[in-house]
Image (cartoon, rainbow, N blue to C red; front, side, top):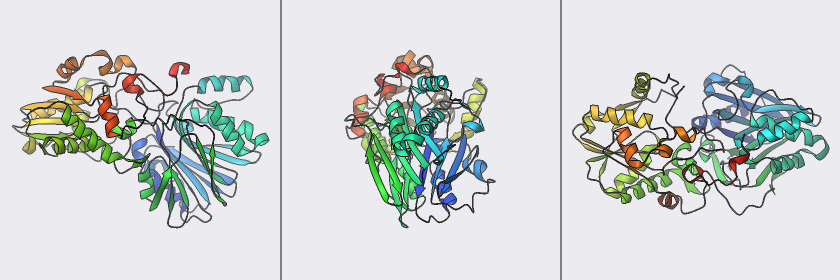
Length: 460
């Protein structure tokens, strides 16, 4: 089934700790609401009272998944939450997170954003040693590894030992032993931020926009290779990996993250506007208006218009009540699904030469339909611009990426793609200019270059 000509991130995580958190379930609920864009298949909340944990989860969007779980009146001093989009593991309720396990020292709950490249190896070793697994999720591997070691070594040493063994991307929030614990992988591939609200409660979240929803202030990013332990004594930082090569995922800024988030010190909105400005400098074209494809293409279009001096126009109207649409792979139904989500504003584009800006091009199916829609609405010319480099390689670290033979950028030249999608011209943001838009820091760009911070060869 074909659902979208976009990448999808695996999930979002949220956690809060306080000595007396008011309305703790509601706090996590609304924190997760601002992370709903990171996963729409399932949602869950685990609440800790002392050392006891209760977990509630369901399928679908947050209101559908949690509305009838009776969580409103639950009390506790810490909680974690999760929204999920499946890249590894099946789409069943038992694979929804957080995962919970009962140990001799008390219960533990874990929520995970990311993807491990050696999970199958660890799983096989654990199964040989007698462990059983109920799902094919990476997160179950993590929680069972921690559980096996916690009885002898204590929870913090067990977590440290586990994260030293697993390889890949991960941002973890964990409830155990009366503590809220956050962990970010050694390269910082997946994001995780630390914040505090006006009551002094500490929060962990995939993005800073989740802190805004509960009136919490961003303190800092959790560092790559850092374990953050939050309990009644405050915050303790433990470094488990000294890695000088910080490499966050560049696609977080291009597409995944909300524009109102700040990640690793960079405004997502500003980075997208800059990307559009650099894109305008690359290849001049005469045009009347600049139009962005909602949502994440709009900020790059604003930057393009600012740099080029060509008027920015809201030429595509998005139906805000439509989520991801699962459709059968027929051309007619693909087009119908896109038309439900997006509709050209004929009065704004009729008779105009248009620069159409989007964030990325994966298979090329959706943009082809949008360009056709623009022409039907009267556009004289459609020049397509992408605020990311050419996507040529699959991701192994928590992004739902097609195989290379499904990536149009891997199998066709730029001229061939331009002809395939029906554009008058086509240009991608260069890798150099992408890095400039991100302040020339180091990022994972494996889907563009095929060079990854961790070798994917051990991925099953």
